[in-house]
Length: 358
Image 1 (cartoon, rainbow, N blue to C red):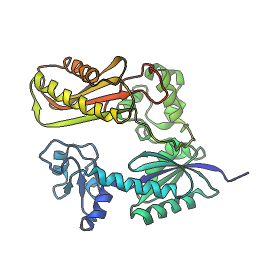
Image 2 (tube, rainbow, N blue to C red):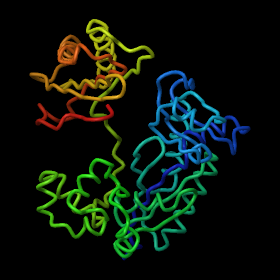
Image 3 (tube, rainbow, N blue to C red):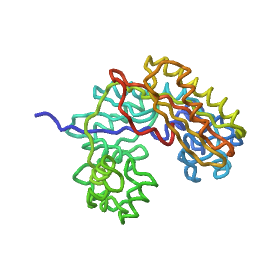
Image 4 (cartoon, rainbow, N blue to C red):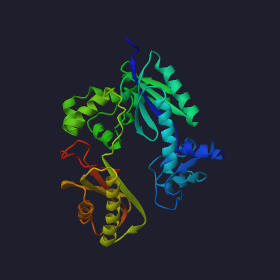
């Protein structure tokens, strides 16, 4: 019988900011904010902030203009996606060099499937390998499944290691608010609180039927399991395959007429379609995202009559959705998502439209 199996979650510390500091060592120790084109007078959001900037209350997703007010002395830099992609690939190559299964989650995080008698020692070896290969620091969460490993990483930041398993789940997480769980945001935590469920322990103790009634048969069961820290322990290194492609633009001046909106949607839909052509898979659903001034966001989706590789069908569907928007409201952001048939998947079954960020 071999060593026990573990799931490790590797998360790069302040990844984007750290990449920028490597390129500009003089920024070390300074509050650094990365977002948009680096101009706080333009409409853009914070992609990441260094720990020094976070101390001023700056966080990801915050309007860049507000971030600049919160941290008036911060260095604000434009997003440089190619540089972050290159750094991410170096990190993932370093992880694969450890001879373990690596499931990439994004630019700055991955799950590892590891067999080890001493997972903490292995985790420290992971940190050393990443640092040597990239000069970047990371935190590592150790768990007996993905949920616990992912949550454990937060307790290890920065540059640390933390283990969270069935043995200490309720000791560590039981008294904590439900919003501290992976996948529970402010809206869900408020809905839970309406049922007098405020802590992880209360969520674990809640009747599953109550959660199903509130959230439906799939998500209700999932939240019930989440409260107990249950989840998959399978780390899959299959290449990630995109379900769709999106194009999104925040306009420096509001779009004020239906004609402006339609022209912008045509352009975004055409760009999204071009991205799907490179995948070689037909589109079966189109989603339109709109943010009205000052900051109200809405999405509308349409399943096409059948999967298509025709540009005009995709663009027309997006334009039809645009014509359902409120013509009296000014628009500050538009996004179009073209969702594709997965490989070896026929005409896909109806799925819930993508909501929120495209």
